Image (cartoon, rainbow, N blue to C red; front, side, top):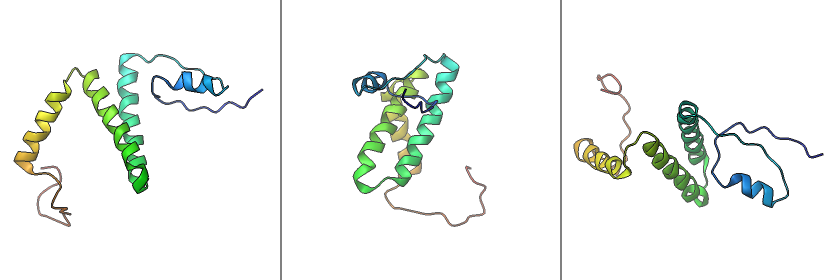
Length: 113
C-alpha cells in the first residue's frame, strides 16, 4: 500500500489524470462557490510566495500560474479579463506603474491613502 500525502488545496483540472498516468492514486472533490472563492485567493497567495522565492529560470512558470489564477478569479466574479486590463491601464495612467523602481522609505501620509 502506498503512503498517502494530504495536500488539501486547489489544483489544476488535469492533475488527477496526471496522477493516475504515473500509477498513483488520489482523491478530489468539487468545491462549492464560496469555498472555491476562498481557495482561489489562498492559491494566489501561495503562487505569489513561490514567485518571491523563484529562481530566474522559474519566474515564467510562476507568472503563468499567477496569470491563470487572476483570470479564473475575474471569471468567478464575472469580471471580463479585458475589463481588468482596462482598469489596470487606467490605474497606471493615474498612479503610474513600477518602471522607476521607487521604494518609499517613509512619508507623513498614512499607508494606502
